[in-house]
Length: 102
Figure 1: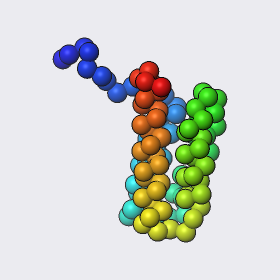
Figure 2: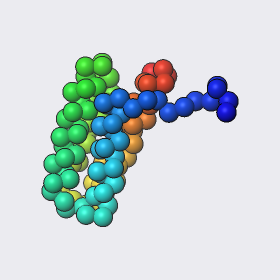
Figure 3: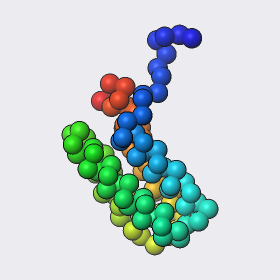
Figure 4: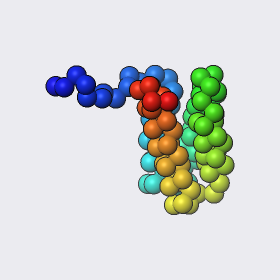
């Protein structure tokens, strides 16, 4: 194995929240009106916003604010797509910061 190859960063609390949020959002493709999962996503977004603010990551907070609006909107394929894409963006920002790119 080439030691210069980039490895995924070790999962910290923020990374785990991003991963949990993404898997919950992906679940909504099957059950879009699951109120329990929607409430869970709102909680995850609030935790990500708080944790990212502690770390000085303003962009993540802005994305969380957008996603909170989507999570509270009425269920639709577009809304689920916004959530999945948003958690994907959060995950990429987290990975970039952990790898030293940001």
